[in-house]
Structure formats: C-alpha cells, structure tokens
Image (cartoon, rainbow, N blue to C red; front, side):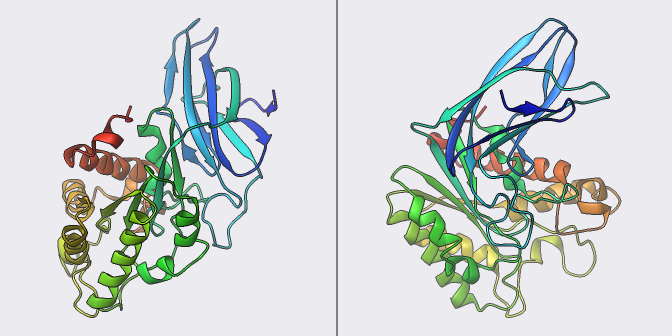
Length: 314
C-alpha cells in the first residue's frame, strides 16, 4: 500500500494516464467522517460518516491526466499517475481501512468542456463545478474534466490540447457537457453560434452524446440583472444562442444560467460571499459554491430526463 500521512492520507500509485477503478473501505475503531478526493482536489464521494466499529465499502472511477487540473494553464502539473487523498473532519482524522485499484475495463466517460467556472482548480480557495461533479455519480462513471481557465468557445474548439484532446479520446456512447460564455465577451453572435455548433457536431461524429450547458451566472447584483449578464459586448445573447443550437442539432440543453440566477437571488446581495472564492470573487466559486452549482447541474440532468446519465447517479 503506497499511502502516507495521517490527515490527509495521500496514496500515490503511479501509472499512465487513463481511467482507474478504485475500491476503498472506510471506517474503523473510532467514529469518523472521511473526505475522499483524487488528482487535483476532485471530490469523488460525499463525506462518508462511519460509527465506531463500522466500515463502508465504495468503488469509483478516476480519470488520470498529466498534467492534472487545468490542461494548458501555468499551474502545478501535479503528481504523475493515480493519486487519491483522504482527509478528516471536525478535528478527527480520516478512517481508511484499505484501498485497491485497477485499470478501468469499461468506464462510462463524461467529458467536460468549459472555462474556469467548470475546471479542476489547483488553488483550494477556488473550485469549478466540474471538480465536484464526480461525487454525484456511481461506479463506473469517469468524469474527464478538460475545462480550462480563460477559454472562450473559439479558443477551446480550436485547441488540439482541449477539444482536440476530447475528440481524440471519445468513443461511441460517451457524453460531453459543453459550457461557454464567460470569456466570449466580444464574439459575434454568428461566430459563437458556429463555435458551439462545431463542438456539438464534433462530438456527434464520434458516436458520442453532446449536452449543452448555458453559462453559470455571476454574483453581480449591480448594473445589468443577473439573467441578462451573458448578453455580450456585441449584443449576442449567449444563453439564447446555445438554446438555438440545441434545437437545431436536436441535443439536450441545461439552462444553468437561469437556475444559478435563481440560486444567487435566493442567497442575495449579502449571502453569496461564503460560496465564492475569497468571499469577493463574484465569478468564481469556492468548494462550497462549486458543490452547490454541481447540484444544480445534477438536478437539471434529471429534469432533462437524460436516462443513461441519470441511471448512473448516486
């Protein structure tokens, strides 16, 4: 067993990039709540509570990429191979009884294409909703998060290290969730429409299933209303264009703009800060906010009746 430390416990197994099935047994003589993460702060399970003398067994699938985290940003590359971490809660250490792993034989892969609001952030003050997404899925779902800070629809679609990396790995039956808009401030409506369409048709060409996601709302309560903030500098209504492409291409669309706007309005001007990075960043969430937005995405998937995905949710 290649695990060291007590809180956190860090398990490093090496290996090539790919998908790995990991089985853990959590619990022990003392009561504990164990937080399980993999790679770059990626939440793999909800916090697991075990009573004194109780153990619980879980299997999940981890997507391993090198570098970890954001694919092409100047951030720490992480540790090569499969990495799993266990942290305690409320002053008690984590309870790891055993851990095993193997190359995944038949993973159900969900790829994520997006920007900094989706990506695996390496700074613990920040988190993208894609970083929290794996915790809502059961084995053998592997979430391969290729979202990258600063990317627009055009830069992502045109990058061989981003959309090209996804399409080179896509196999029939995989899924790809596509969310852009935050960095498309100056793109024309026509160009944005074409960029989104290019990604949808690229996924379809592999026999895989694209799902469009309108951009997460920002916690900006002055000036334009939350629901109108993704009408860009050229007058392009980006969420509306995404919905238009979904109709044209007969693919599902998740209206995260509206759902996250409702969430932020419920939090209010004085309630959004605990869910956002440093308590001041109106665009980027922290771990708590990313988990809340990932729940919104989960709920939208259920409401859209994406049966193949819903059947693999916890």
